[in-house]
Structures are given as C-alpha cells and as structure tokens.
Image (tube, rainbow, N blue to C red; front, side, top):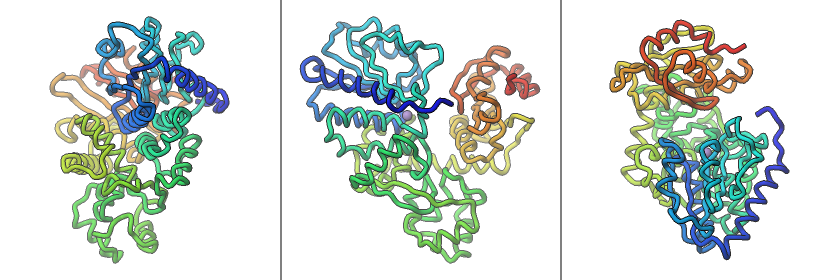
Length: 465
Ligand SMILES: [Mn+2]
C-alpha cells in the first residue's frame, strides 16, 4: 500500500502474459474459458475479453463467480475432466485468493491467465508460482486497486496489446471504472486516468462537467436530488416530492428539468443551498436513457448482479434499459436513499471513542439492505469517518446478530493501518462468530452474548498497540 508503484515491473509482467497468450493463441489454444466477478467491473471485464476472443475467432465459454463457495468447489464443475493444453483460462476482476487457487492450478496442464486488481493475501510467495500460471495484479507492484486501476482497465490493457481493434469496445472500461471507484471522473488516477483520457480522445466516451448527483444523473433535478446516492443530499435525499419541489421552486428552477441540462446559474443556486459539488461524468454516445450515463449504468449492473446475473450480462449489450431492469433500479435507489435518511436523521445509535453501532433491526432497515446502507453511509460520511461503523441487528432466521462493518481510509490512517479485516479477525479470536472482509468493508455474525460483550468493550477490539 505505502510503497511507490513500480510501473515498469508491472508492465513487464503484463507484457510477459500477453506474449505467452499471443504465442499460443494461434496454434495451441482452441478453447478459452473466461471467468469473471459478479459486479459491474467484472461484467465489463468479461465483455472486453469476449470481444477479444471474438476478434481472434476463438471458441469460448464464460462463467461468473460470486464467491459464495470455495474455488475448489466452484472449479470442480468447470475444469474439464480430461486435461488439455488446448484449453486456456482467463480470470478477470477475480482470482487473487492464491492460497486456494495455486494448489488447483499446479495440478493442471492448462494455462491460467489471472488479471485481477484485488489485493493478494500476505502469506503467498509471489515467486513460487506454477509455470502455467500468469498472474497479473497491479496491487502487487504498489498500485491501488480502486483509484489507479479497475479490473476492466487491466482487461482492456491486456486485450489491446493482443488485438488493437478492441479499442472499439473500450467504452466498457469506463463502466468498470465507475462501478468500482465510485468517484467522479476528474478524480481518477494512474492507468484509470490514462485509459479514460484515451476514451475521450477517441470519442468513445463523452466527458461532461456538471452537478454531480450519481444515481440520478439521467433523471430530472427533482428526482436527482431525491435519489442521488453519491453524494446523498442531506435534507433532501429520500424526501417526498413536495419538499424537493418547494426547494427548487424557491430557487426558480423547474423541478422537471433534466439534471444534465441545468444552466450554470441554476447549478450555482443549488450549490449555495446544499453540500453538492460539480465534477466530471461520462456518457456512452451510442446508448440511450439511463444506460447513456456511465455511473448509473454501472450501478444498475451492480444491482442486477445480485438479483439476476443473466439480466446484467445482457443489459451491458443493450442500447436501452428494459422495464424490468428499470423497476429494479428505482426500487433500489428509493430504498437506499430512504435508509440513508434514517441513518442521517433518526435511527438509534450507540457511540464510543472509536466506534458507532447503529441498530437497524426490528424492521428499521430490511436485512438485505444492511450492507449497502452501511457502505453508502460511510462513503457519504453520514456517520463520523473517524469511527468504525457497525450496522445491523438480530437476524430472525439464525437468531444471531449480523453486523455490516465499515471504516473510512481516514480511519485506517489514524489507526496505523488497522481496518475492518483486522478488527473482524480480532473479534473472531476472542468472541467467536463467522465473517470476514477487507480493509474498508466486512461483516460478522455473532451470538447475542458475544455481541453484548463486543458492544461493551468495543474500543478494545478496534485498538491495536
Ligand atoms: Mn473490480
């Protein structure tokens, strides 16, 4: 994390994987199996690889892995019974759990190309890889897997070296970047920034500047203010139409005017009365309606991935949104903004020096929404970013306490590198329970007595010396 990115070393590893793929793709590989992650970045990465294999006229199959079972179990159903060098695997946006994968890959004849930007476990020796594994992961060379390089950015860099005409599909990269980074486009860095600039220069993406209401950029300003999830608009987000209309009427702005068509003076008037910022956002020229707006398109794929993965995979190839997908989208932003409003205004909380507990149980927030409510509360700083957030409650079916745990980058800085995963590991050691996660996000299930002990002594679990 702290070390300076080693660009040359990373590009050398990427070039090597590209070289091996090119050498074998003509005469050796006749079937490629692509495996990707079930989110917007994963689906965009997969589409890039599919287009590459289409250009190369290769047979291919694809699978999408949601990490609900181990790699061993999952791959058991995918790896061909008869091993052959004629098959190769490409993993995108997934595959950094090397302690699980290396033992499997070691026993196979096929080449495995893993193009991932998730951090690798600490206890893996990066030098004792099996010869058939080509592991390309920029986080190993000091890059940040969110700000610097999305899974789709990496997939695009790989594909473009093999088949330059992949550039026609490069707009897919913007969806992956937006879906993972959750930032306005002016805040991209490193490879994400460079590829995004290339998309603008090639006119594959239209970059615009305006009021940022992610989640509602495609909408009227009334609905934009109501349904924006990044940022959540304090005082207006999740509110009823009347309150928002009267706010806009006072500023003499037509509530039905499109967010993307506001005049400069209108934007300034809104900014004077809210916490909103302007920034850059991306449009896909050949798409229409919601799908034209890259952030909203990515959000839709992230939502659909959990509900109906085949709908998500087909949506990325469509020009306009289906009614089915639109209904799911509206339902999602409607619930999420209402829940964020609850976190911001009303809900019961218990606060210590280092932590905040929010009781979302007893129907306050639907359990299926706990995780996203916790995430967007934290990124919007609706709770103090210097404290770790524990949001959850009693889960009826298990009679356990289920908690979504989040922290900010600021928290990690203040606490010398301690993040959610370390706190969860500490809780599990001392109180039991099931769970896990990464630096910024994770979750745990605990018995009621364990939960009470946690709550009473929380600062001792969050503190490390
Ligand atoms: Mn990703």
